[in-house]
Length: 51
Image (cartoon, rainbow, N blue to C red):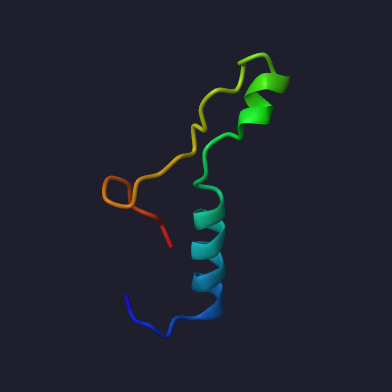
């Protein structure tokens, strides 16, 4: 991907990057283990972004 990219694509990539984090430990404790795993986790090699 080029270094210079449109702002819209850059914002979508930033949003995808932020939403790719695991569930915090305090959330697992607070929900008594109901939310253990982030189902929206994405691996850069296995999954493709529709950006």
